[in-house]
Length: 608
Image 1 (cartoon, helix red, strand yellow):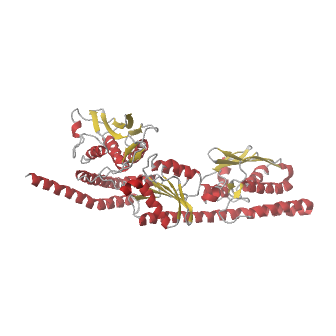
Image 2 (image 1 turned 90 degrees about the horizontal axis):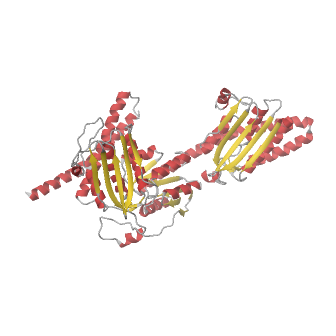
Image 3 (image 1 turned 90 degrees about the vertical axis):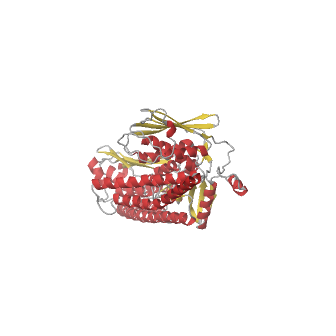
């Protein structure tokens, strides 16, 4: 009888594994197709249709999570779970899970609180399984909390990290705690929120904690919620990554784990614009580097998020960032958020690496600004194909931007030349010597103005100011003391800026600000370097100013003007830096135009 029961249990487990694998593909198709219909790929939908399809999509996702749990449970029963431990930042790991769970939370009135301090010691755990433990416990807390909060905290007890997941949910009756970690057990409750599942998530969590050498317990009371407490080892200074499931150490693998690699690592290839690789696993890092070297990419490799941000601060004109989601010091989501504060999807593509390879991870990565993602372990061909797609996209956007900038610049040059030549023609009759002086200034202007090696080139602040002075000299010859220009310059004269960005602003201030008044006025040109490698550029005048209505008209691309429109200048700044300038104006007071740009001396040469 015993042998027969064991055989039947084995048949049941095999059936679960095979069925789970077979379910994953059609479930993925159901979720994908439903999601595309919700996004109106097949045409418009009414609210009821969207609501019904959303229920289908969420049901598909829930079934997918169930299938994954079944597969993990079967692996654990057969002893097939392998841990790859390493030093991990607990706070960053909790932050990453909270970010994902916020997506699931929706409009449910529950707050997720990470009370772990930034200075909390590192733990020693498998990154993927640590995320799974946290997902299961935080997800369970959210599931049984209708209103209130879920708090994650931690403390040290000797060399052990003690982690608490507390919620303010429904709780359970005393004596029921012993059933919580049993497979296929569920808490019965009445609530408007869905509590569906098969009850193996916490059983899996318990086994994963125990595989790490820790313990887990639960405390609860009806109406007071749950407190799950589990322990994990603290990361020691001399911790060596090892395979928990393996009793025999492979000498070659052991030696490779102790290789001393100095980061950041700079590798030059045929393609000069480097790819920034952010990965804290040595084996994965080497796989990525080897793949990129096949295609001739230059590489900057770092093994943590802080180093990645430091390299980005240097503005090395990265072609692409390959970014791991889970790292020891900070999560990839945090790094991604910092990147998107400075660069658009097209300016700096980001390819995320995710070991969990779960739909929710990929979805949250894209929602937070990732261009694409690759699941680990990855095939070299797949990684290179995704890298190639993103670099092609960036190149196409860059070429389109260059063409647009060239067009906008071409609108500026003829206008300035027309004005300058008119001024010289008038002076040739009344003041020939002054006309000669202006010709020399114009010659100097033209030499600098057309000294651009390529369409996307930049000039120095010093040269741009020389152009401004040449223009002002020409206008003063016509209007005399009605024009006064003051300079407030506190910046490196060799800082790179777009050509013809200051001169048209000064021209607008003179033509449309000062010359509208018989007495003229003063134009102030200010360039100041500020903190964090930022430079403030401001051109202001005390001329006639503009009403709010007039300002809107001038900033419109449809405005017909005799001069160079502010929209034109603003559009160039936006194309180059991804920012808008600020215009402050009041009738009878004057106008100020200002914007902030990076102040690195060779910023534009590297980023373009």
